Image 1 (tube, rainbow, N blue to C red):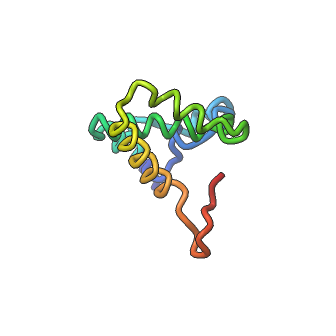
Image 2: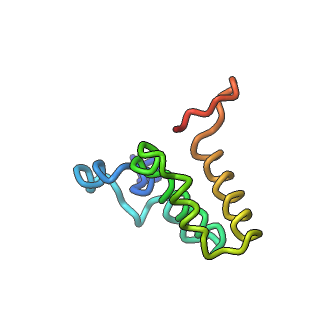
Image 3: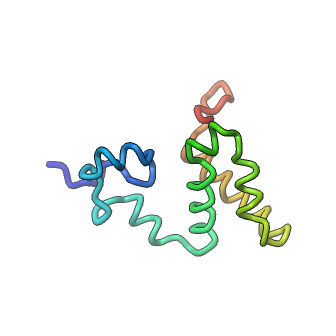
Length: 106
């Protein structure tokens, strides 16, 4: 029996998938959602920034750097460095480095 713990998360798919297969997602049983709700404010901010920067549009238009700069423009240097470090940790978890040293991501 599927208890929903292995169901896909709406935060990890493209808007196209959400538009066509919305019934596949259940936020009430989503493990990602439950973990996201438990994040402290700094990690929640980093997750949100990562979600924004990792969109297909940002990656394919090569605007990730500009978007990240805009997200962090109101932060002091140390806070921006911390945000980038947190985003880097998220990226490493979402797009792990292959053994050859090359990531599977964009």
